[in-house]
Amino acid sequence: MLAKVLSSAVLGIDSYIVEVEVDIAQGLPAFATVGLPDGAVKESRERVRAAIKNSGYGFPSDRITVNLAPAGIKKEGAGFDLPIAIGILGAAGLIRKEKLDSYLLVGELSLDGRVKAQRGILPITLGAREAQMKGILLPEVNSREAAVVDGIDVLPVGHISQAVEFLNGSIEIEPDHVDIEKFFSRANRYPVDFGEVKGQELAKRALTIAAAGGHNVIMIGPPGSGKTMLAQRLPTILPPLTFPEALKTTKIFSVAGFLREPIVTVRPFRSPHHTISDAGLIGGGQIPRPGEVSLAHNGVLFLDELPEFRKNVLEMLRQPLEDGKVTIARAALTLTYPSHFMLITAMNPCPCGYLGDNHHQCRCSPNQIQRYRSRLSGPLLDRIDLHVEVPKVDYKDLSRESSGETSSQIRHQVINARKIQQQRFGSTDNVFSNSQMGPKLIKKFCAVDKAGEQLLQAAVDRLGLSARGYHRVLKIARTIADMERYPSINENHLAEAIQYRTLDRNYFEEL
Image 1 (tube, helix red, strand yellow):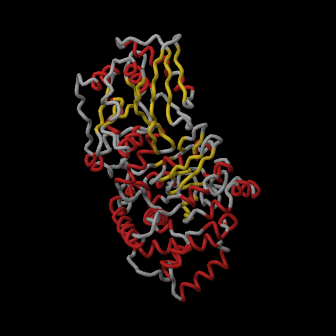
Image 2 (image 1 turned 135 degrees about the vertical axis):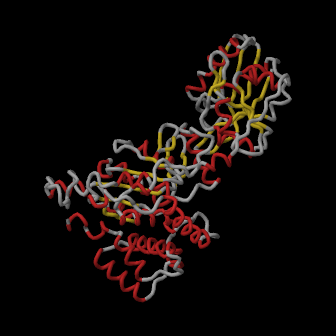
Image 3 (image 1 turned 180 degrees about the vertical axis):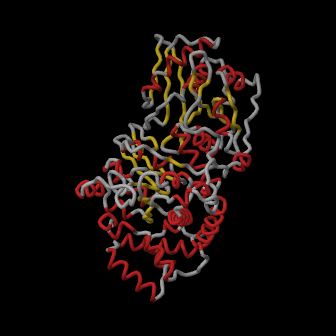
């Protein structure tokens, strides 16, 4: 007897349909799984056997062959337990096969027949809808995540017996639904606010510009000056996630197994420790998993104590910073994950942290400072748009009652600037903010007058700007002009943009 059950697997952040074919033939008792299964899939025979027996069904004592097609792609994970079990029962004549072609099944089985959680349910459900399936049977704990997808019946099952009875027509399972608007209505409720930051007006201004144009930032200052505090509050002034952005971000978290809500409605803020490996930051493994740069997609990646990160790890940031994606190549396959994020970094001016501080004496030798500085390569710093000094906060600022604009007020400015950019790049593919402009768009939208050209020439000669640094000054100036609703870039916008290129004027030697 032969039975076919449809299931699904995840490759990157997308899914593909897997046809689970089960054949029961006469012969010595055996259970073989083919179709490039990994260790977890091979072990499913023991879980499936125990789950079927402990659920009150008879397990065939014949030769069982399970094929996972397409056979050329390696299958991983325990999500094939439920479809394999249903396929065995179907081939044994215990399940009517009429519904098997209309529903996709996925889920891990415990030994007593319970259906356990599965990673990557959102992309699997989206793939099932694209394949025009009527519905998907999946673990109860994943049903709210899957219910985010419209146009397909999401049927939660807690035990294998529920799936059997549903497929036999003995019971009906009510499709799960989620109120997406309810989750998005709570999206902008943050426990922190920019109004809590006292002093640091220059840093606040720089982060506002960064948020308005999607620019990368490096903050330099002594310990306790508020660099981390400022970075943690950056997501509170970014524009709200759109539904397509939220869906893509949720797919990444779902595949990584970090999803806590049915859908991600706030921009991610990822802050990995400086001991992170290259695979942890970029992604990797035998079957590559998304790293921190992908988990920060559509959000913020904050690297505190930047020079403490291993140099080879930092150099891997070049591709995602330029392309908004990261490609991980392995012998078996090559995967590309989206990784469009704002990079916010922080560092001390020297190893002890007090170089240039009026209240603490720096204990570092010139060689120590140079070695500390040399941990950051020129090409990496060139890819960071704004360089911001964050000095120690004075007592006068700390003791003030009011600390300036709130996150809500700043976000309003940011959203207005982003709207201008959306109108500007409306017909341009994959460009949504000023930071994403290439040379062609810079030439088109960042024209400067004669006075601006003279200022830029002086800046290039004095600071030794590279071509990339020159373009970044123009993009920052374009964002400042957008915030002030100027159709063109003037001399003042350029002057402010140039002052955010601190590291180009050899900041460490001037201190």
